[in-house]
Amino acid sequence: MSPIRVWAVPGVDNSRSSELIPPGLPVFWKSGSPNHFRLLKGWLSLCDGGRCGYQGECRRNSNTLPTRLLDLGEGGIHTDTVYLRGTAEISTNPAETRYIALSHCWGEKMKGMTPEWCTTYDNESTRKKEGFSIDEVLPKTFKDTIKVARAIGVRYLWIDSLCIMQGDGGDWNTEATKMTEVFKNAYCTIAAASAEDSDQGFLDQRESDFPYAMVPNSSHGKVFVCRATDDFPGDVENGVLNTRAWVLQERLLSARTIHFTKRQTYWECGGGVRCETLTNMRNGNHSFRYDPNFPGSIGDRSLTAQIKLVQDLFEQYTTLSLTYQNDRPTAIHSLAMELGKALDTNVAYGIFGKAPFLHRSLLWRGLGCSLKQILPELPSWSWMAYHVNDEQSKDAAKIKYQDVEDVEWDKSVRLVEQQEAGNNRWILKARVMRRRDTSEEDGDKEDLYFDLGQALDDVRYAVMGRKADANPTYYVLVVQGSPASGWKRVGMGLVPKRYILFDDQDIVAKIW
Ligand SMILES: [Zn+2]
Image (cartoon, rainbow, N blue to C red; front, top):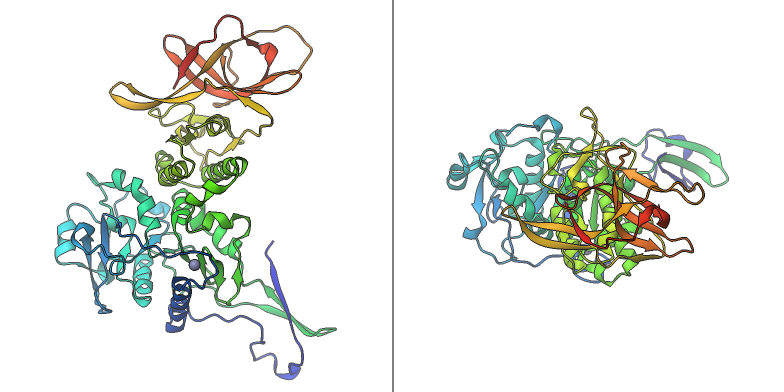
């Protein structure tokens, strides 16, 4: 269902209406035209000048730069040649080195390839010394981004495949963990919201036609109806770019973003969302997510709100698509670390170390799917280690956190950093209890969820917390293993006390 726009224009001459654009019907500037760019500049200067409605500064003034940037040319001299720059060689004065960051889809067709426009160790030095041709080398989405950057007067640009070394021996692994700095410190982010891949571009090809219907004689005079033109949820939230897992942190860490969508351009900053129709909107319930100081700003919220926020974000993240499933821990890494900083806790594989975040973040289950652990280097209790257990499936391995009420969390549950097999690892410690095979028919049953879909016997329970009740129930991780080899998570659940043997062993064990 999409929203509609209804408007009445009293006193318009009926006889001429068929050839005229009715007053009230929004008509946008041609995408990429001087007037369109003038509007973008207007939004920027409004926000730069602190007149965007946000009580603070949206604009960054950091002198931390990404490792490399693309230099589009000095002082408005725009040639076809652009240069790659190592930022160690350029000024770090924020006024001189403001840059735009691009958030975009690579596109499935690039899977497994290193397209020729990418920067590699083979072409790096030529790109730095002699530059390279925009026209001959770059795909349309990048060309459009350069057009916009130049039009709004920004000299430097960050695009992942140009500023991170691609291909064999590239520095993707180290650079991919620095996304916080890249997007946080950008002068502004350009989101190619409607471009499905790098070739598609986002200028000159939007839907500019708005069919409308007219009711000639109503009690309000002449009434017009058309599809709502300002549809930020439809154009941006549900647009192709925002279905991509990498993009969640790019958007959340950006202080301000210009979204180029199929129908119009939207400006988003701490002051809300601005449309080309000059409508100014609040960003709904999620406005705090787009606060320029997010996620630092969540420190002031209540504990309940903080937990809900983190869980909502991770649940949302697990619904998003990844070209490479193995990127699951990396594509959210920067955001997770920033959340950890804001909440003053360490973060290991999507699990927060501080109680009660720790207990709450361990109590996840797969949503509507059975899972398969695809990353054995990650612990079994991290949802990041899993993918759906179906080779053919394109679905994401969605998770859902357990709703809890009145719980006394178990104090022995801890994350401990340890040296194991030459690596520093976070190990989970918890009380692992034997399961009591009870023949009593009466009373509540165990409510167990098994990660791989198959119910297992011979399990034990790692106690997370106790639900305060006349008949206590325990929130547990279901584990398998042995005291000698250690334990692995195989599921989670809610278990009435009579199923747990509290008698002999109150030993805190290692779970990996
Ligand atoms: Zn602003």
